[in-house]
Image (cartoon, rainbow, N blue to C red):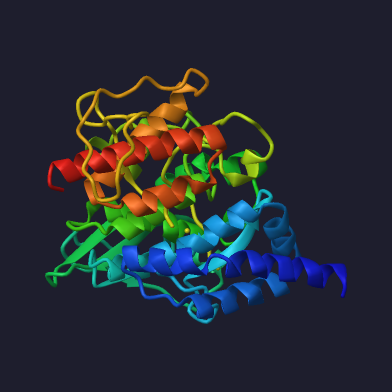
Length: 384
């Protein structure tokens, strides 16, 4: 047996061991993907991409995390559907989601019934008619891009559950600012923004537009969060204009973002957690589990687990004063955990939040699990 075949079999074995957890995550996330089918698609991807296979072997934690996202977001790896893909990125395996996959997640969540996203160029005939009426967009789809002129922006037209339409126009400046904020583009000026600009621009437009839909599905929000952190598609620079950041994150209805924790490829390289890239909200690639959201434990609402009395399964623990953070954990780690707890409490996705932190470094993971359990007990005691 060749070395390549051994690596392939090892990578597939890593995924195969995830079956019980995958099935449980499908149930808790209320998705309908089938483990055996997704295992087959993942195996095909590994077989056809040596770089992906090597990344999976060298960083098995990232492979498990990425494959778990499939169960959480419910987007199949079937290449014929074009929703999501396992891709190698920065030495780890990432679940990359296309703009079609983002639309599918929003439809599955009931946030919208359908969606159209189109890029607009200077030579197109485009007439904007407001947010509640479809625009007029005329162009020859067979023209070369150079003939259509300069890229001027995009529009996202969503059919809402009540039958109304919502049209969001996104300027080229906003999309370019999103690209400049992307960690991948910022550092290397290459990757999906070069190879798949149209698809990345559409994904960025959807990220902005979804903030203005009357209803918002948690799976799409989690998907975007995952792509912006683990996928390196978030804001990586403080040089991005504040107006662009506010437009993307929805301004006043969002808490102040905190830097994400290191992903699994950094766990083996360091003993203490180090923030990977500052959070954010923009970027994408064609061919984006979203980080599970969570809820910030306030001083009077997020107790720490008591080290002496052990919780019995199903028992509601009384609220207690939160214990101080471990001295060795940086403040940004504590803030990230607090945000995770806040979102988990708000959306009731405790299992998904625990799954998300499973790839964190040991000290950060234990602290996060402790805070999540405390928050979950408190939510149960309050009848949530």
